Amino acid sequence: MRKTVLIADDHPVYLLGLRTLLQSQADRYEVIHEAVSADDLVEKLTRQPVDVVITDLSMPGKLHADGLALIQYLKRRWPNIVIIVVTMITNPGIQNSLSRLGVQAVLNKNSLSVDLLQTMKSLFSPGTRKAAAIKSETVAVVLSPKETEVLRLLLRGLTVNEISAQLKRTKQTVSAQKTSAMRKLGVTSEFELYQYAQQLGLNS
Image (cartoon, rainbow, N blue to C red):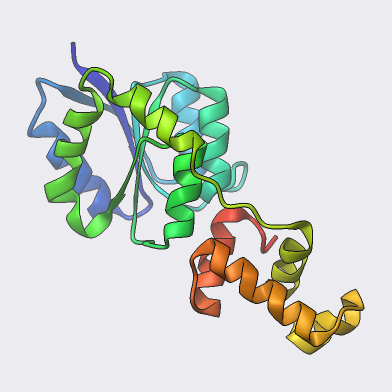
C-alpha cells in the first residue's frame, strides 16, 4: 500500500525537487498535498492527514509558527505521522532538538537527491520507527533559566554590559552563562546562536 505524503517548502524549486523524487517511486509514495507555509501545511493536514510529512524548517506563517514550534504542534496533534525535516541548517543543537521532538529524520537540502528515498525506505523497514522513537528520548538540550534569560536579552540586541546592569549580575557571570549556553547548543558564533534561537522561539 502506498504511503501518502505532504511536502512543504516556501521555495518552488525545492517543492519541485521533492515531488520529482517521490514520483520516481510512485508505486510506494503518493504526494497528495503541497504546502508553501506553516499555515498551509496545518490547514491541509487538518483537511486530510497523511502518512508522511516532508517539510522545510523555516517557512512563513501567520496563524502558526515555523521551526521547532511547528514540529512540536504537528507531533502533538498528529502523533503517528512520520516527519522528515529538510533544511540548510546543520547546527547539531537544532538537530538534537528535532530528534527529541520525535522527528524521524533530518536531511540536508544539498543531498536530497541521494538521501531522501534511501531514508524513507529505511524508515518504513520493520522496527525502524520504534528504534527512532527510543533514540529521540535520549537526546536533550537543557538550558538553565538564567542561561535562557541571558540569551533572550542578547537576541534583543543588548550587550553583555547592558544585560549585567539589567539583571544585576556581574559581567563575568553573564559572560559565563552565555558561553555555557552556546556550548550546550553546539554553536560557536552569535550568528549561529541567533539562527538556533529562531527555531526555539527564544527571540520572540
